[in-house]
Structure formats: C-alpha cells, structure tokens
Length: 402
Image 1 (cartoon, one colour):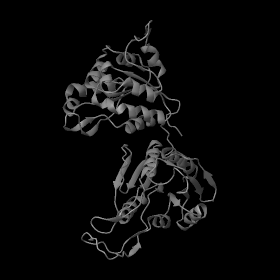
Image 2: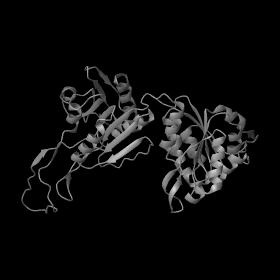
Image 3: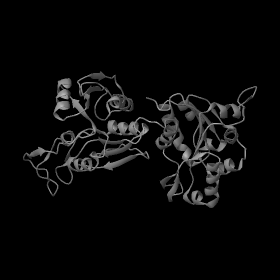
Image 4: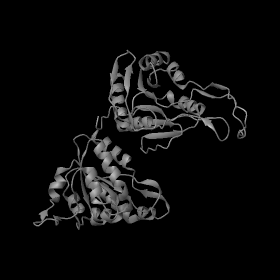
C-alpha cells in the first residue's frame, strides 16, 4: 500500500536553512514508494551534503550543467529531467529561487529544469516571516500560482532568525501528504473520520509518582500517519509519549490519565467512522491520590487499587456505525485471550501481539501482529516495522469498513 508507488518525483533543493529537512523529505518520499531524483543549487550544498541525499535517494545528485568530475564532461540534460518527472517539488524554495522562477531567470540547473518541466510543480516556500510577508514575495507566489504551479502553505513557529511567525517550510510528512492527495484523488478513506488512541496512561499515586507501563505510542502514531495518507481526517488521542506527528489532517489531543482519555474518546467517538484503540490504558489506579509526596519510610506502603474506566468496553457498548478495532498484548494463551476480548468488547477486529516474540511489543520500532476478524478468520504477519504493520492493519480493515 505504497501511495506514491511508481511515481517519479524530482526534488529541487535551494540554499536555505530549511534544506536540513530534505534528507527526511527524501526518506518519506522513498518510504511511500516514489523514485526520487534530486537537483540542488550550488548554495544548497552549504546546508546539506549531496552524499547524504544521494545515499537516501539511491540516485546521483545533480547541481551543475555538466558533470565536471569526469575526464570528458557530460551534459546534465535539464530537458530530459523535466520530462522524466511525474512531479517537480521545490523544497525549500527560498526568496531568491521564488523570484527567479516567477521571472523566468535561469542561472542554475534547478531553474533550467523548472523552465523545462512539463509535469505539475509543487513549491514549498521557506524564509523569515518579514521576507515571507513582503509584497514582492507575495506577488511572486501569486504569479507562480497563476502559471499553474501549486504553492504550498508555510508553517508557523520559531525561525532561524530567532523570531517566531509564518515562513517555516512545511514538515516533510506534510509535504508528502500534499503529493499523495494530488496523485490519489480517490483515496479509500477520503471524507472518513478516524479516532485512534495511543500510548500509555499514567495514574497518579502522589504529585511525583504514578502507575504506568512501557507503551511508547509508536504503533498508534504509525496508524494515524497511514490513516492520514489514505485520506482520513484523524483524531489521535495520546497518552504521555515522546512521539510527534504533523499532518494537516491529524488532530492530536494529549491526555495523561485513563479518565482524561475516556472523556476525550466520549467527545469524538460518535462522529467516528473507524475507531482504533491502540492505547495501553492502565487497568487500575490508586483508590486515593495523596495530596503530598509520600515520604520513604521503613514500613511497607500499601496501595489500594481500583479499576479505571474501561474505555474499549464503552466503545463496544455504544457502537453504532463505527468499525471498532482493539489491541491485545498478551504473554500467555495469546490467541484464546485475544478471541475472548474480541467477543467481550463487541469488536469488529482485534490485533494480537505477544511479548514472547522478539522485537515486538513496547518501546521498539518493530512488531509482529496477528489480525483476528469478528468472524474469527485470522491473518498473521511477519516481524516488520510498526509503519508496515499499520499499513497491513488498514489493508485488513478496508474491505470490512461499513
């Protein structure tokens, strides 16, 4: 399920500080199945090395009109490059490059390729906030749009100048989402709303300590990423985690406790078309949360634990139109326990993984899953990245999504 599979993407990198993001951009494009070739302006090499980009793209990086490192120089044919690509992406597009593109100037290979390209052109501007807001740059972007180019919005946040505002180049994942949307106008989850829970919950013992688990949130975040790439509008409710994600169609709600996650789920569940409970919610919490830090004593400390709200049971009991998927992390009798949970919680499917499998479970980037459908049919998958697992999970959901 590579959403840019077979697409030829030509990436033009100009000389701005945002070029440091381009190795991640190349990786995201390749991960989604694209073949990537890269053209850099000479100044871009001050910010990112051609060796890094060539290694990630698996293609030579071009920056001059001739290959001057050979005894008999060869012409780097900008016309051929422009005809090769299914899309030409300029990222970052600096103020200088925007101006040259708008005015038809041609003093480097990137600009020559742009003027020769017959394919759709995507432009990701990147500059300081005052430069971005300047009428000349706004006019250049309007001019480029009038030519049929697709000028992407800019992000907002801290800039290289130390100021904060609009002008940041979009994050690589977001740029790739724009390309995916363009090449896949009939994405299978277009106009669908998906609710995903991720990560652990922390149940407070006192202001310092808590009961929790080792869940990292990696699986839930991978599911959110794949869902967004398939066209969905995603609400991702996450417990404490270091994972980050930035997509225009993913709304992240951060919570800490099971109670807070339950309230967030209740607020969104009725609007969801698909709900995936990937969070490792604590089953128990201290009956009483101490107002002050519990001091260490020689005597034993006894905690009385009471059940937390069963979020998945609530979702199963209140299911109407939703497709509801649960997760089961087991250490023994894995298949029987997962099937039992599937029935008890009124699920449409459940994903089983076992801590007995090396490389699977918490805090790692890989997983080995078994997908069990409501009709008890089973599909097993080998150990693979959690992103690949997320793709496999949606491959199983889509034929059954009502």
